[in-house]
Image (cartoon, rainbow, N blue to C red; front, side, top):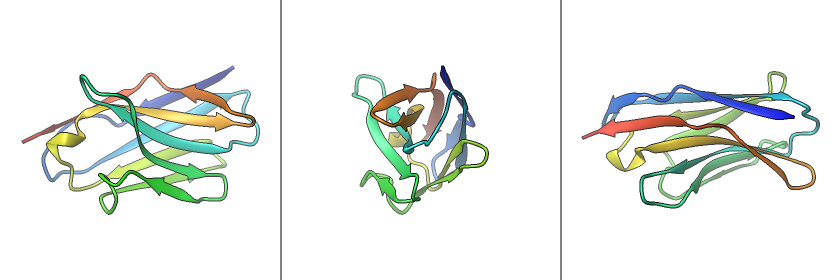
Length: 116
């Protein structure tokens, strides 16, 4: 069984920064992709950023240049550094992990609220 636990969500003013962390535990072998998704009220869950086992990164257009994803393979952790936060970044942020082949796991989510 795989568990993902996020931390770091908070209430911050617009222009502020936050760092989200996610640790994976359990029966984990050969992690393929780790990433972050978010879901705002009334909207669908969307990809924020992902990072592959080869450290290839992918970002949504809305966060490019402001957010940075990184991972620590030895600790099975993934991070999301969020700078220049905007009110529209307000959402629940979910950690995602994919194992071969197409085994997808999700964390419980952490709330990020950006005040204007």
